[in-house]
Image (cartoon, rainbow, N blue to C red; front, side, top):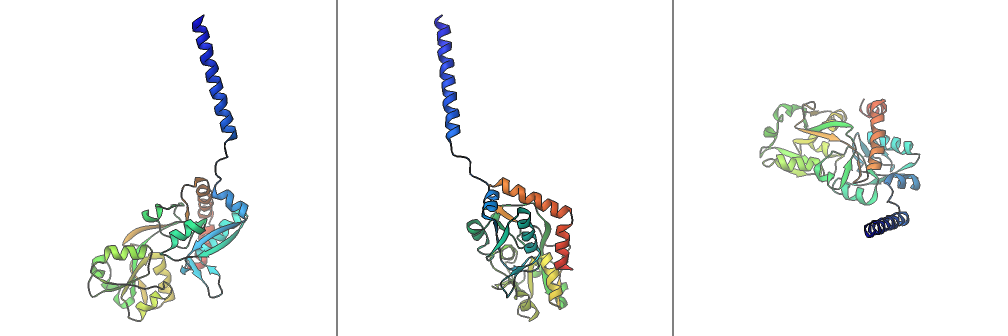
Length: 265
């Protein structure tokens, strides 16, 4: 009989503890919502972009943005039933501005482990890589990192992004100049003030069209593998999966291709 009483007492204690735990759970504050819920409640998708990287993002003189990733961000906002609000940033401050001010960052953003420390990336929407752009007459001189990395070579690069990191890592002997304006930087090569810029192959293909006399050097075989994706908040899997699914559909149904062709063809 004493054993039976002991078992009954133990069962009562367990039942009481379970009831207390359930009550605590019921009274606990709900888990924090996803950025997806915030965007829907706000009625606006805050988009960070540099506005200096054709064909992905370009800030026009009338104060509007345009480009492949601007059209894509507008399409994402439309899928959510909200508007897109653009926040102008720069390559050196892109990640910090994104974390502080935005829901997504777009504009030809290359994936990198450094950026991954503070943000998540969506699935890649483009495979790209670093390749040289030079005066056409000099194309044969700058086919490889070794040919570029010489004291007499004047390399020009825009600040704060993967282009500058690539240049500092690989061009330790060349004369590297950091030029602040990514829009007019290619004119410096045409004018003979620099010899080479190494940037994403997709950008070199557009810039050789915009700047006759400049040639992209083997863009189909870049010097370094790279991918482009969109930055979304770190840790927010719900929002990331929504954007990933939207992007997957856009890549599969031809929407992205149509937008890309509009700016590249």
